[in-house]
Structures are given as C-alpha cells and as structure tokens.
Length: 249
Length: 341
Image 1: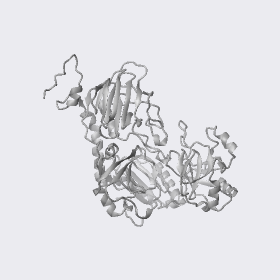
Image 2: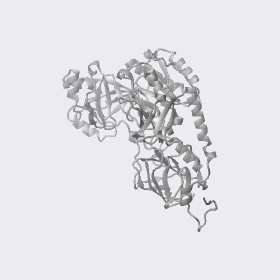
Image 3: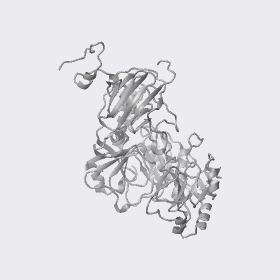
Image 4: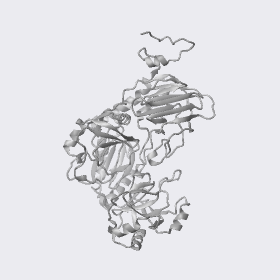
C-alpha cells in the first residue's frame, strides 16, 4: 500500500491521488533539486510509456500519473514506480532534453508595471538595479497552473525573496509579470493578485490553433529582456508578442 | 434522416448557465488546463443510451433551460436533473427521448430537482473543436455560454427510435458520497477525519462548475497552525478546505493545482450525485478503502454499459396523472391505456 505515515515523510514519497492517480513527490517544499527531480522523473515516465497510463504531468515538486485502474492495477503500477524511484538519486538527475529557452521582451516599471519601485524598495535596491537584476535573470518554468498556460517561474536571486503584499491588487492585465518569494508569474488572464506587478509582456501564453497552443512547458527556461514601452506597444501587434525561443542543448 | 442541408438547433432564449458539454479535454493538466466537461457525465451516457448512439456533446443547463427550435428534424433526449419541458406546448417526459420535427419549439423551464439538466440530440452537438473537445470551459476562457440567436450545429444522425425512456435512480437530492483518502488527508487531525463521516453537510448556494461549497453542521474543519502546503495536483472530487473551515468539493472546472489541504476525494462514481445536489440538499461523506472504491468504479462502469439495455418504450402509467392529463389525444381518442380512477 501507499505510504501514509504522517511524520516525517521520506522522499521520494508515493501517494495516491483519487482512485486513478499516483503522485511521486521529491520534497515537502519547492526547491530547485526537487523541481528538477520532478521534471526528470516525469520525462522518465514518458519514455517508459506504460500500458494503461492516460496522462503524465508534473507539479512543483512531484510527478503525476493518471491511469485507468480497471486496465492496470494499483499494485502493478506502484511496484513499477517504486522500482523507478529507487533506480537512481533523482535529486541529482539532469533536466530533461528538448527544453526551450524563451526570451520574452518586457517593459519594466513605468505606467505599464506600476509596482516595480515598490518591489525594488522591499528588496533593498534602486529601480535601475532591480531592472538590471530582473532583466538578466534566467528562470525555469517550475509548473503551469491556475489558468491555462500560466507559468510559475523560479528561482530569482535570494534578494527577491520578498513577501506577497498585504492587500490584493484588484486586477493586473493579461501579460503582467508579477513577482513574490523569488518567483515570477505571467498572468495569462486579467486577474486579482497579491504579487507585485513589476513588468509587462506582450507574448500570448495560449494561442488556439497554433501548432503548440501553449507557449511554455514545464522545465523550459525564460529570460525577460528589457524593452521600452514604445517597443512593447509595437509588439502587441505581433502574434508572438516579440517572443523568441531556441532549443536548449 | 432527410437531406436537410443544415442540421442545427436554433436558440431563442437560454438560461444563464447553458453551455455545450462533452466528456471534457483530458491530457492538458501539465499546462494548467483542467479536464472540464459535463458536470454529470452519467446524464451524457443516459442521453446516448436513449438515442442509441455513442456519447456525444449535449447542452448542459444549470438551473434554467431555454426556448429552442429544431432547425431540421431532430431526435432529442432529456436527461440529468428533471426540468419542466414541452414541445409545441405539450408537456414531454424527462429521462426520455422524443422527436422534435423541424420548426417544433422545445421549451425547457426551471429545475424540478437537482442542478443540471441535459439536452442531447441525435448526432450530437458539433460546435467548433477546441483542443480535442467541444465543451465550453468558461473558467479557462474556452468557448462561451449558449445565448439567444445561436444556431448550434448538429452532427449527422444515423437514426433510431424515439418515445423511449429510462428509469433513473435519484441522484438529484444529495445523499451519501463515498470518499477515499487524498494526498493530504493525514494532515488533518484524527478527530476531524472521523468527524467528516459523522457530520451532516448542507450544499451551500455557492456553487459553480469549479466546485460546490458544503457547510458542516457543527465545528469547522482545518489544519492546525495555518500549515502551508506546497501547491499540488488537484483531481475532481477533492474536498479542499480553505480558511473559513467550510470544505469545497472541486468539480469539472477545478484548477489543476492548489495549495489548500484536501480532506478526502469523492470517488468518480459519486461525482454526479454531488454535482446534482441542489442548494440546501443534505450530504454525508463515508470513507471507503481503495479496494471498495475500485469495486464501486467497476460497478459504475457496468451500470453505464448496461444503460442501452434498460431503455424501454415510453408508455403511460395509470398512476402518472400529470402525464395522463397532458396526453395529446389523437382524433379524440386516447391510446387505449386510459384508466378511470
């Protein structure tokens, strides 16, 4: 049976999710190694391609597998998963191949992203230093969720370990680049948020009819080079919103 | 069917929560898109059985139906939560299929029980395919609500019987929901886990396609010390406990991941029952083992497979007074099944 012990859990940890899901978790909280392990384990599951498995995914620190419990038994899949879990030290695993590096042009601060100054102040930097730091950071898509195609990206340098603001911002526009606790989120829809709005992007995260409807996939890396508001305004007319990508070696 | 050029259903009026729904779009949770699809998938299967076809997209009607006109000769099935319905003014039976000739007007009124009624058509509704399904997922911004003036395309009907019905067990008034342990069940103190099964819950008015709030009678639920849980995969049926201590049962359009702890997970076989529980309905939860849950799933799938064999001709029962009174007499005669009381 699945490990259900309440104290202290041993990782990797195998748990059931509903009657048709199994989850392999690599940590109690988000960390770079746990996220990397989840991405690597997910890639391993994809190459295993076991019969009866209907969906494979990853969250911040876990790999998830949905299956038809009438086609393959829990015991069978759990045994396979435990064997795979024990086959190596997943926290030392390399990131999967075929990931992409995206460059998403971003207008920082100004009227489009009114909370840059506040975020810089909380982080103890000038605005110019903040832009320099954020525009040169390379972050990884740790997971997508909340809304279709909406990424969580991390980790920013330690100096960006700033809390969420006390009050919610009533609405940030689509494409808002928001920041808290060493992570970025790009909003794929207009929404309220407790994260600070530091940049504005024009790249659509979700495009119906495109060959890849979602711009970003878990494990992809992203940079947010700085552009002026005028340049970003022109990019609003571009179907790619000025974004470009290359396959990582 | 006849060679009508355009097969469609014309919408003259639609309630505020009418959408096209099918089995949803599985396979996108890695991208933050939940499966969605019909809140009561049993109702889709019943519609398919009545029409003698494979499961296809239907109109899901939350709370209120609408006024529809057949843009061509159609066969329709009415399933899920029973609603008052008539064709050209003559009442028609729910949990049944009927002919809806071109030009006929189908009026579907408010709910009589449950939460979601379904209108299926021979050939199925066939609006634009989005990522492998036609169902609207409004939370994700896919598709839209059905509105007056819409002409919803209908697929080719290979034909079949009408005036048939299906006896349906009541799943429209709450009741018991079987649950299995979730990822985080053990984070909750033992007394709360025990209390989940002895507490009477009421389905709150706060409910939509994302989930249903259930209010416990007595003490609230929650994890001690505002424990922060790393955001983790959500599966439909998860009972999520937010700050106010009242659990939410997450349903078709739930988010794909979430950071609130989950007390337990309602098994798939009982999701139609929670989806169809109307506001104010009484609900109870019962923990079952994984083996029991899997046996329930096997039985549920058998029951779905057996639906076509359970379809029977639509005949009037003597005790069915409202039906009798509304029965259209042909040339002044009843069909011989009229009984005096």
